[in-house]
Image 1 (cartoon, rainbow, N blue to C red):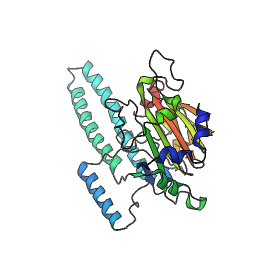
Image 2 (cartoon, rainbow, N blue to C red):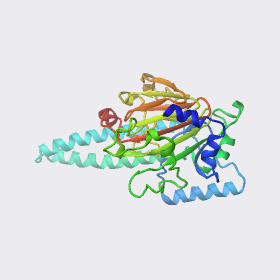
Image 3 (cartoon, rainbow, N blue to C red):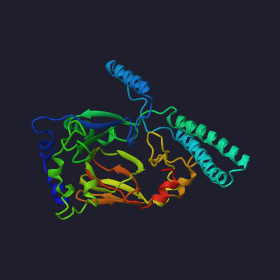
Image 4 (tube, rainbow, N blue to C red):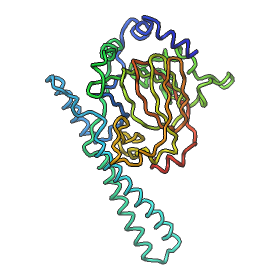
Length: 349
């Protein structure tokens, strides 16, 4: 079924008919001033977010270059944020030991005072960690809306317009399905693509009395169908997800570099609370081993996915993705296992 879908999607004119139909709908698109893409959640105060959006819109109206502030971030600044995390975790460990000791020695005044002292230090370190995570932070990408034809015009370019010094765009389709309360009408995303469940029948959830779908371990936990169309050279930064993932490539080629969660301590992950938590602070395309020496100890394996291939990515596995040519990928998640929970917890998650 996957191979037949890949053949169908690569037939001349099929995607244009499928996506444009009577009207070429505006859909989610991510922009990067280079070829790096990193998921993020804006944790700045509301007033600061509004001010940044207002400034951005003003620059656009004036025809200015509005994307100078975007990018994956400086590795040195990320290393500093991680240093604050390390200090915070050390204090937490000391506090836990102090609490346990104080509970066993209620008459020991010094033990009670030490617990109180460490509690204050942990609170102070927590604030410092949060400040370090957001200091000088800018969104690594810009979220836009673009029609398929506009995206294709930007993405289908010659090699001289690609590479880390040139802008890249990521086009997205979302079939909401039942992603929780009140989403079956497609309301999880403006311009949602519910027809994906008819196109990608192998990702359809089924009722309990029917045969379980091959690619969904827990159909009731499915979180929609997500498709990402990438232009050549696009890099999705290394990260892990808390759910099982079935990934199919329907056009082009993608290189996946994978790593077991037992490599977590060598991944130098951006800490919990950072806008891009769960992602590696290391730029894998140009790693700084002075700031991240443990990265040299990480072990990985890799595959190149071809149209019609399906990759099962278990819970908590790391993945770094490079688009080798213009490509179309779709995936679906179905719950998460507790496997490798200890390793991920050791990294602060």
